[in-house]
Amino acid sequence: MHDNSVFRRPAVAPDTLPPPEHWGKHAACRTAPRSVFFPEDFSGAEAVAVAEEARAYCRRCPAVDPCLAEALKRPERFGVWGGTTAPERRAIARRQREEAKRAEAQVVTTEAA
Image 1: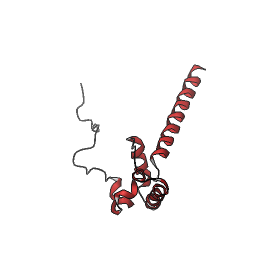
Image 2: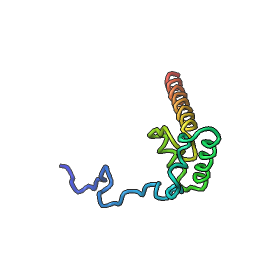
Image 3: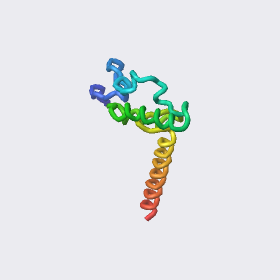
Image 4: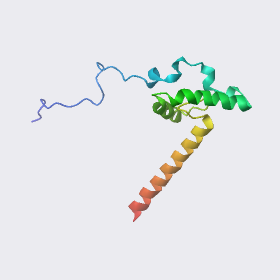
Protein backbone atom coordinates (compact mmCIF):
# COMPACT_ATOMS: atom_id res chain seq x y z
CA MET A 1 0.00 0.00 0.00
CA HIS A 2 1.28 3.49 -0.91
CA ASP A 3 1.57 6.03 1.89
CA ASN A 4 0.26 9.39 0.63
CA SER A 5 1.14 11.15 3.87
CA VAL A 6 4.80 11.50 2.90
CA PHE A 7 5.70 15.13 2.24
CA ARG A 8 7.39 15.77 -1.10
CA ARG A 9 9.17 18.99 -1.93
CA PRO A 10 7.91 20.77 -5.01
CA ALA A 11 10.32 20.87 -7.95
CA VAL A 12 9.96 24.66 -8.19
CA ALA A 13 9.49 27.45 -5.68
CA PRO A 14 5.90 28.26 -4.84
CA ASP A 15 4.37 31.30 -6.52
CA THR A 16 3.98 32.93 -3.13
CA LEU A 17 7.72 33.58 -2.87
CA PRO A 18 8.88 36.93 -4.24
CA PRO A 19 11.20 36.73 -7.24
CA PRO A 20 14.87 37.45 -6.49
CA GLU A 21 15.88 41.07 -6.84
CA HIS A 22 17.68 41.89 -10.09
CA TRP A 23 21.31 42.94 -9.71
CA GLY A 24 20.67 46.03 -11.85
CA LYS A 25 18.71 47.63 -9.04
CA HIS A 26 21.99 48.20 -7.21
CA ALA A 27 24.18 48.98 -10.23
CA ALA A 28 26.27 52.14 -10.07
CA CYS A 29 25.43 52.86 -13.72
CA ARG A 30 21.70 53.35 -13.05
CA THR A 31 22.07 57.12 -12.89
CA ALA A 32 24.90 57.51 -15.42
CA PRO A 33 24.42 58.74 -18.98
CA ARG A 34 23.95 55.72 -21.24
CA SER A 35 26.51 57.03 -23.75
CA VAL A 36 29.29 56.56 -21.18
CA PHE A 37 28.96 52.81 -21.53
CA PHE A 38 29.25 52.61 -25.32
CA PRO A 39 32.77 53.63 -26.35
CA GLU A 40 32.10 52.10 -29.78
CA ASP A 41 30.11 55.25 -30.57
CA PHE A 42 33.34 57.26 -30.39
CA SER A 43 36.73 56.98 -32.05
CA GLY A 44 40.39 57.15 -31.08
CA ALA A 45 41.38 58.74 -27.81
CA GLU A 46 37.79 59.76 -27.11
CA ALA A 47 36.67 56.12 -27.19
CA VAL A 48 39.44 55.19 -24.75
CA ALA A 49 38.44 58.04 -22.42
CA VAL A 50 34.76 57.05 -22.55
CA ALA A 51 35.61 53.41 -21.75
CA GLU A 52 37.72 54.54 -18.81
CA GLU A 53 34.88 56.70 -17.52
CA ALA A 54 32.58 53.66 -17.68
CA ARG A 55 35.15 51.53 -15.86
CA ALA A 56 35.22 54.16 -13.08
CA TYR A 57 31.53 53.45 -12.46
CA CYS A 58 32.21 49.70 -12.57
CA ARG A 59 35.07 49.91 -10.06
CA ARG A 60 32.69 51.23 -7.40
CA CYS A 61 29.74 49.08 -8.38
CA PRO A 62 28.43 46.37 -6.03
CA ALA A 63 26.89 44.55 -9.01
CA VAL A 64 29.99 44.31 -11.22
CA ASP A 65 30.26 40.49 -11.02
CA PRO A 66 26.66 39.62 -11.94
CA CYS A 67 26.77 42.31 -14.63
CA LEU A 68 29.81 40.70 -16.26
CA ALA A 69 28.30 37.23 -15.90
CA GLU A 70 25.12 38.32 -17.66
CA ALA A 71 27.08 40.04 -20.43
CA LEU A 72 29.07 36.85 -21.02
CA LYS A 73 25.94 34.71 -20.97
CA ARG A 74 24.04 36.76 -23.59
CA PRO A 75 26.75 37.51 -25.15
CA GLU A 76 26.75 41.31 -25.20
CA ARG A 77 28.47 42.51 -28.35
CA PHE A 78 28.70 46.21 -27.46
CA GLY A 79 29.36 48.46 -24.51
CA VAL A 80 31.13 48.24 -21.18
CA TRP A 81 29.62 45.59 -18.92
CA GLY A 82 31.11 44.45 -15.64
CA GLY A 83 34.13 46.66 -16.22
CA THR A 84 35.01 45.04 -19.55
CA THR A 85 34.77 46.11 -23.17
CA ALA A 86 33.37 43.90 -25.92
CA PRO A 87 36.84 42.73 -27.11
CA GLU A 88 37.80 41.88 -23.52
CA ARG A 89 34.61 39.86 -23.06
CA ARG A 90 35.28 37.98 -26.29
CA ALA A 91 38.73 37.09 -24.94
CA ILE A 92 37.22 35.97 -21.61
CA ALA A 93 34.63 33.83 -23.41
CA ARG A 94 37.34 32.30 -25.61
CA ARG A 95 39.43 31.41 -22.53
CA GLN A 96 36.37 29.91 -20.85
CA ARG A 97 35.65 27.75 -23.90
CA GLU A 98 39.29 26.62 -24.07
CA GLU A 99 39.32 25.78 -20.36
CA ALA A 100 36.07 23.83 -20.73
CA LYS A 101 37.55 21.86 -23.65
CA ARG A 102 40.70 21.09 -21.65
CA ALA A 103 38.63 20.00 -18.65
CA GLU A 104 36.46 17.79 -20.88
CA ALA A 105 39.54 16.27 -22.51
CA GLN A 106 41.00 15.60 -19.07
CA VAL A 107 37.81 13.79 -18.00
CA VAL A 108 37.85 11.67 -21.19
CA THR A 109 41.54 10.87 -20.70
CA THR A 110 40.98 9.94 -17.04
CA GLU A 111 37.98 7.76 -17.89
CA ALA A 112 39.94 5.96 -20.66
CA ALA A 113 42.79 5.12 -18.28
